[in-house]
Length: 388
Image (cartoon, rainbow, N blue to C red; front, side):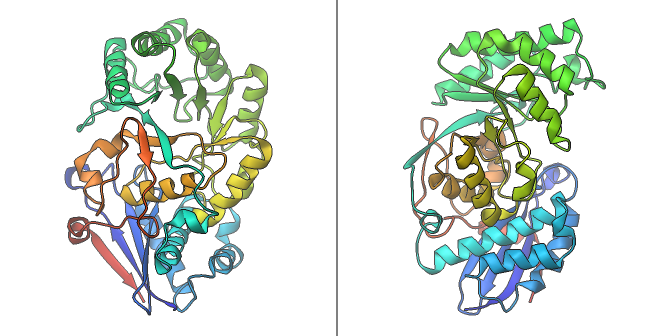
């Protein structure tokens, strides 16, 4: 069995295409086996660049034995030059191809992927409702008032979630973005506090609250926010700072003693080393960290240092399915991210199977491989490139 072609699917979301543009790969072999992977750049800028990078990397796997994932990954690292620098575009391309290879291997032996990762540790995976401030429903709608924050938090809890993540700072009054967060004013701190306090009051003390600031603060403004929200019993704070300078996050953890989470912007196992002992939660994305091969090494670092692992999952059905398989076998697993994008029909209908949590928990899928592939509708609407 050798690899004969790689197909790249640039999914079409119609009117939402400018802001949501998943890139999926399918790796096929001479014996008819196939595996699927997704690049973790469904949002933001850079999808076209990742597609171009996949087109350059794909010929390196044509003719290879897909079981040799370590050798293939090492070839990408050693012989492409730029993989030795943690660039997101390069590693998103590597991640998509690597995940597809692991999916292919598991499918070829008719086993769920978790069996190749050491076996299942968890039958059910607790999930958290991620980013309720985007509307938490079938249509995205930014909310700004504490009343709406509380209303949507209660909706998630009534659906069975026991943990909620929210970004209380992204939108100011009237949907205006604040331009400078070097220091937060008393008015800003009070406004953010009111939003989170409304959630706490609405859901009670037993529901976990996670704060995400999308790397939009500085170390000093992050200290201000942590101090202001301390009475509300925050579970952990995610991506308060850009991790381009990991020492800022390390200093913040040491100064405040708060539980910090970081990692969704990092690529390659070595980039996690400066943070692994000081953060409470590490958050690799299978679509950008280097795929399953890299994530196994990151998970080993987390386990060795007593750090929790919560995958960053914000993508299409391929990304979700791969994450569920990895989490099922991960000893450091904490929670699965159920991003609000998964509530959108255009997203979940791009997968052949529709996995969703029941009462806030996922049952680990038992289909071979990652247990997911693109739907016929998604394939028909996608822009397709084939590398042989």
